[in-house]
Image: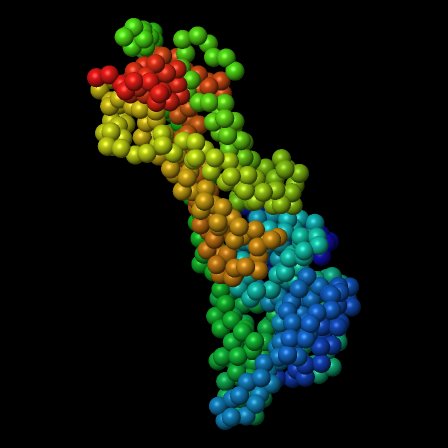
Length: 302
Length: 224
């Protein structure tokens, strides 16, 4: 996406300054994906391609309904199909619409070294500003959900924008618009949480005792949430992380190492300056030259 | 190249060229690497034509540095073998730092500090190469897991900062000990410089009637 609304940026990658915060009061949005109502029709995938005008090369059949087989720079959302035999021995077909979760505390943004290449809007959407992206792939390492994909063509990172351009003008995301069963809903985060509560009550009444909302606290909650019939085991759904969080390695790299390193480099340089000021240069003295020359002469004489 | 009369050759032209290729690569890697490490240093990416170019060129410079440093290792490893005197020299380091070198053990071709710089880089540069390849997104992304890449980038950053600090010590020591920079640019030192800083090396050159950088092996064995 492009830089349309810079005053909306409440978080900016690789910035040590406070981003514009005058609009930080805005209601946060959320997309709610009710897995129990999804029929796997892929209308959301088609709508995503159409609205965002992205295409991907035709791939190969990998033996599953997943098509294409993975997210890529032109596939920002993907239905992932899991065939799971439940405890009663019945088959359950678990279908999850995969894509960026729009974390409240985005690991991609934390890892990004390019100022302004990743931003978070006041409404909570995490967006990639392609003109600032340098293609290093740090966002891939920062992301707890394995979402961003780097293009081999233009070396930019791509992922779901939550249709920030549509949401910015009061429309719902394209996937929400296209969903024929109402499995994808969009609204304020509080309204979506409330709606999810009703759905979960209904699922429980139908025998899904572990139904629940997936809004993982490890990343501060997400702006894409799931209603899962088996919320006690998110990983059943094509490896959805049970407890996603930014890797501690990324935390050390980005939080601790940066200031410690600059301090270490500065200390070494300042130590040099003060050594120069207090002890000064180590210069060869005339007597050194005399002694050195005498040694050479003596050996030459022998 | 001709050297002024009465001086000693410290480094051959081959060593000097090799050294400065390494040094130029190191400086470029440091600038481009720091640009991608800390937001406040991102402006350094402008030196390389912007962020995309910085990201693209950094690993290639790294490959050149690795090959170049390997050349330095081949040329100089013998001069940097650790011996018992080096420990004694390290114990006398406070006197060395205070420019009071009387009573400090005599030094051969390299002192313990120079050897430590050499071996620190000999350790850090391969670590930087291996971890750097693991995070070279364009060509090597599919060969490691994202979890492994997280470890690699953390080690790469720590090793790079270590190498920069070693580099600062190396550069400062060269400025501080007068005559060292000329040794690596024009190749020669005066007998007084050799007497003051590398007396054992000077004695071996004198004993074998060599003008440096190494004692002559075709002459008679050094006399007692």
